[in-house]
Length: 162
Figure 1 (tube, rainbow, N blue to C red):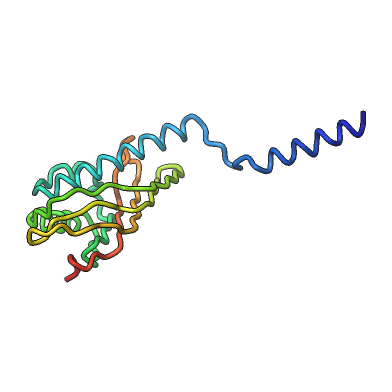
Figure 2 (figure 1 turned 90 degrees about the vertical axis):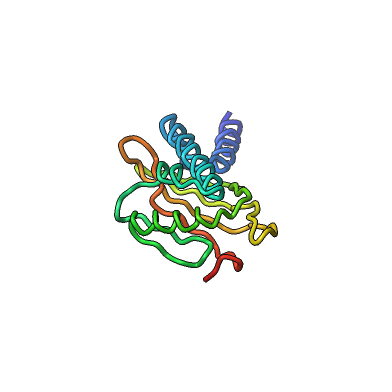
């Protein structure tokens, strides 16, 4: 009986070693789903921006002064006024095309959420399609119970650098 018990304990320890240490609670899973939905709204807003529409982008971002945006043009914008001005400049370019996130990785901790991945798709510059495949990090904060973007950072795209 002792040998059987010892074998079962060892087998149990082996199984436990393969389980994730932090099993998400139902609330954490719900937060992850809401965060993914907020991120999907960002990409809808980004694609609307490529058609010249800024309003959807205003809806997904926090309007706080601690937000920041480091986009594919290589510039850094700090504070909501600067970020919004940059989005308006980009909307005026009407780049066309569509971008989506691939391989999203989600982390949620309290009122902060982070999603990393690869932005893929294309823009149209001077009538020519330009492929997009760049790394991205988006940071969200819960404000009044809703996830709002407070930071977005991507690799540079040579055709957008100034």
